[in-house]
Length: 414
Image (cartoon, rainbow, N blue to C red; front, side, top):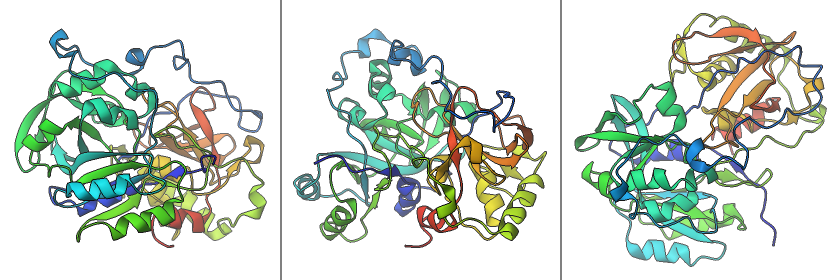
C-alpha cells in the first residue's frame, strides 16, 4: 500500500496547552525575503533550489552546532536507515503507563513510536514548547539534515539544548552561550545548536535527563509514525486506549504529497477558479488592515495589533476581515490551493523556505499586493514593510486562501 498524502498541521502547538508548566508562544518561523526580482508575472517556473542545500553538503555544515568536548561523541548511536514521519502526538499532564505505549505500538498502521517528555517552559522569559528525548532514538523522527547530524545529538546527550533555527536566530539566542530555562525548576542551559526538529510547534529539544531535572513529567507524550494508516480511524483507536486527561492529536492531515518528517508542501497547482475565494469586501478589508501595520515593529511571536512576526501579520490581517487563519507559516501554506505565478492576485500568500536545517519546511510568509509588491514582517530590528516580490532562492510557492479550508486547518470547524 502506498503512503497516503498528508500535510503537517499545528497539532502540537495547540495540544501542549494541556500541560501545566507554562504557556507556549507561537512557533512562527519568519525570515526576510528580500531578493529583488523583475516581476511576478514574468516568472512561469519554480526557481532553482536554495544554494548550499545540495546533497554534496554535509549535515554538520547545514546544522549550526557549538563546539563540544570529544568525550561526548560515544554517547549517541548512529542514525538508522529510516527517517520516521511524525504523524500523531499523544500528550498527558502526567506520565503515561508503559502499557499504553505498548498498546499503541501494536495497533495496526503504527510503524514506529517514541516516548518523550513534553512541557512548555520559559526560555529567557519567553514561552517555548520543549521535548525531552532520548537522542539516540528520537533523531529518526527529525527533519533529515537534523537527524543526520551526529554532532547535534551528541550535544543534546551532553546536556545542551537544541533550539529551533528560527527561535535561535530571531530571538537572538547565543549559540554556545547559556539561557535561563524555567520549568518547575530553573536551570541555565547551554545552547548547543540551532536546528529545526521538523515537528510543527516544537521550539527546542533537550535530553530526557535534562527534561526531568527541569520538572517535566517523565514519558508523558508519545510521537507516533503511521505513514500508511488512516489517521482519522487510528486517532479514534488510540483515544480509546488513553487514560483520563490524555489526548491524541494529528501532526499531519491526509491531503497532500508525502514528504519526510517536518516537510510541509503546498497543494498541487490547480485552477483556483473552482475553489471558494474571499469576497471583494473581505479582500479589501484584509489588504487595508495589512497596509495599516506598515512601520510597526517586528517581534518574534508577535500577533498584533502593534507588533508582528510574519505569520502573525497574516493571521491578524485576515482576522480583521472575519477570516480565521492558523498561526504558523507552515500551516498557512495549506489554507487553499497553490496557484501558478501567472495567476497571482492581490491577497494571495507567498511562501518561502529559509531554514537550512529543514530545507523543505515553510518558514516565511508574505502577502501579495499586486504590481509586483508584497507586504511582510521581515525580522528583528525591522518593521512591517512593502517591498518588491522576492522570487529568488528559497521561494516555495503561492497559495490562494480558501476561508473554509483555513478555518479547518486552524481547528475552528470540522
